[in-house]
Amino acid sequence: MAETKKYSEQELLELLRQRTESAFQYLYDNYSGALYQIIFNIVGEEEQSADVLQEVFVKIWKQIDQYDESKGRLFTWMLNISRNASIDMIRSKAFRNQQKNQDLEESVYGEAGRTEIAIDAIGLRKFVAELKPELRQLIELAYFQGFTQEDISKTLNIPLGTVKTRIRSGLQQLRAIMQKNG
Image 1 (cartoon, rainbow, N blue to C red):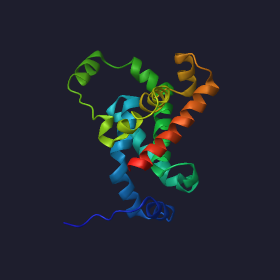
Image 2: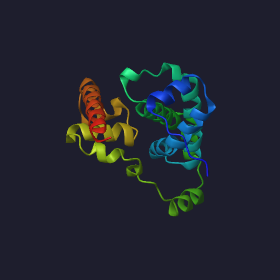
Image 3: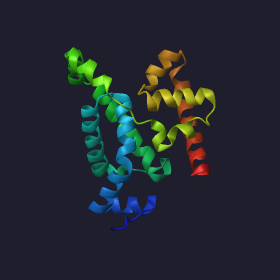
Image 4: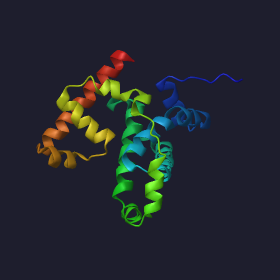
């Protein structure tokens, strides 16, 4: 059995920027499950989630040169691409029309046997749980439930600027927690 190469984030990033297929395969093998779960939590349907995941990896491949290490970790950048692509999918007219036209039988029986992989499988929830409650709530709404910052502002009756500031603060604290524990 062949031993799988492990890359540091910097090594992986350098190989991705050189368009090395083995590095991209490594990226897919090691991150697709976590990104799929995030996408699925927002989109809620397996087939569409798989389509979004494919779009996300194409976008990562094409835009890897736009990633800026000073603004956060590679996974966080990929997570944001996944989240944004998922939100774009559920906002699309085709997706909304498909939801309206879904057969009752498909909906009822499809939900009956579905099992979901807990987001804890990738370990994010334990880190988010360490945040202050007001920051944790905003991060969970934005990243696990797919709310936009405007949606959060309206739902919680908090000014949009405050939502943006708290989410940014929450992400900074989350990065610090992950670095401390990881």
